[in-house]
Length: 185
Image: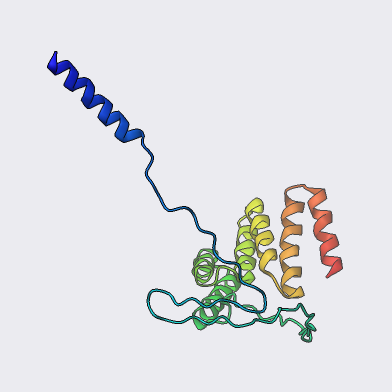
């Protein structure tokens, strides 16, 4: 029985301790500072902070100066000015003129690896494919070269390849497109 009473008393004490609220200091509201006088309170570190009046930031319009528009040069960094590319393209031209199409293709592919965005390689690869009667390949190479071509003469030569390949494959719509493009240049 004593055990039961002590047990009940222990539970009441524990319950009473856990439910009693802790006493805390009543919340204090900071004193309101007036506009003309701000209260300076030193922090605990001993450093004195003095606020200063800051002027209002006003929005202003800034005049925009537009520089003169320059005409873009037709020079591109496609790699066609590299000496190795020039040498390989000269070898390609010589082999093509001598009707050594395998050698010409080999040199053109090497040049294409050096300058993949040079339209001249696509021109010669398209001409070689045309000579081999691979008309679909010739047209595809010429159209790819057109995406990189910058001069009108290069575009005209590539469109001639497209025209010959289209006529050989009996595609009158593509042939008409090529003829219109050649006339426009």
